[in-house]
Image (tube, rainbow over all chains, first blue to last red; front, top):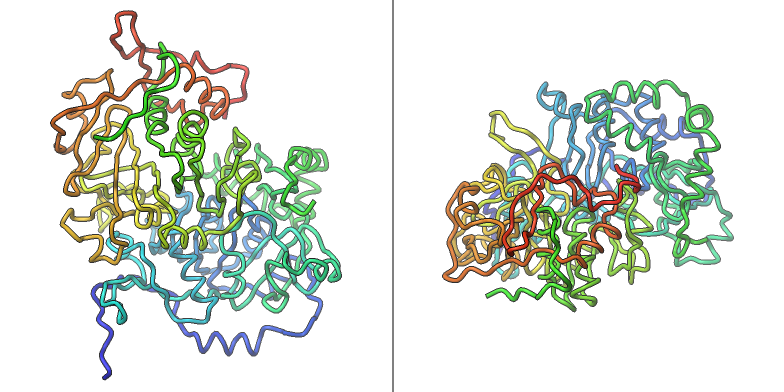
Length: 327
Length: 301
């Protein structure tokens, strides 16, 4: 006999509308299953695959294996009205806010700073509350093509009220359980160690939700330290983190995590990290953006004019741990 | 009574409150158990110290997917996560969803969390201080992984400074759950797993457990009085009939902490942490002290 699912409590925040069938149709119509080369410049990738108003996720953060160069290109192209899924993020969110790119943020964790504070208090940015794992669970649900996912955390918190979560009575056990809506972002940007020209990508080391984010998102831009031959991918298929048919664009960006660390390849630029965090704390990210984003036209120009060979060589030299990173 | 391990080594003559807190927590870590540890700061320092001196077979995971590593210490500044040094010689490199699943499935015995503000029920605030609903407030980074740790590990160990601003009758915002309103079954009514919740709270001055889901003072540090401990709390905790004493750090503990785990003083030299001297007569006093014990030649961030 049909019964209504009993909702015991629910959060009041807007959440990205859930539409698993719509997502499937998007995947059918837009994700190319043919092996087609997708190499392009960062400018072209961001122009074509990031639109104003998109829901954006990215993996890791500005100082730790994040797609830092692609994030700078998003800011350089002055994308607007992005809704950002902030699991395990850091200073990157403040940069996106300062650059005027982000207007809605699902918060798991970020480095709160003067720029975000100003924007929130002036009403330019809305914050909705989650936790890191709840956000990656939402991506997992999106990746599975299901509409929501039960979680055994988050219930009873004040964040719950400012989220899209609901407390329902589990129809199987009769016990209360929190459910959160699946997340199918418009676009995911992910920086990887190796990829072939089709987008078969390898990530070495730990991660947050690389595959989940790629599978859950309508559009996926990969930036990669290294382009490898497809024969190399086929020689060790167990190493493929993200398969080509999830990927829309491949951008070859050596040092694409700069100023962050790329495990097994290079350490972070410590001075740069101190500069950007300091600028954030002082409320002067505008100066940082002027120098590192608007003042240069591309990632290559950034490395050439602002970083230089010597610094990059030092970062590589300091990365002494190779075990487990494919080298 | 909580079993307090005897410290290894000779009592140190000079230490600061943070160092003391880290050593107390290290001695509480159980061998052979699995911990979910915040990636940096004093929870990690306690775990690594414990593995050296007290619990070699305790293992830990971090939210970025590191399982049971043998990390290369110290970590680079701002590189505690997704870092080859932090994840060195791990037994598995996983990801956030998998670590969450390990906790949700009951694998993780303990979580250790630093907290910005706590209340008698062990609820944790890391989101906003002040009136979040329409008033003035100061915002912080959000729960990050702490909500999952506090909800899903079997037992949660909380750390905070001993400061009346940190101990409030009700946190301004529950970012991560303790016993919620303190009523029996409150966590279960919100869908959290049965049998979980706050276990201990440790400050540099005192240790608390939870009796009937309400904070209870069970031990104090020998350099403060009961009165001082209670004065710096915004509510009155329950008090155990017999108070235990938290042993102060030993030279062995401090040597590992200062020279190996935190040579740059990022964790152990916060401005707010006062220095304590052990006097010849066995008494303790707060002293004005430079960070003498830390090698001035080491780089500082």
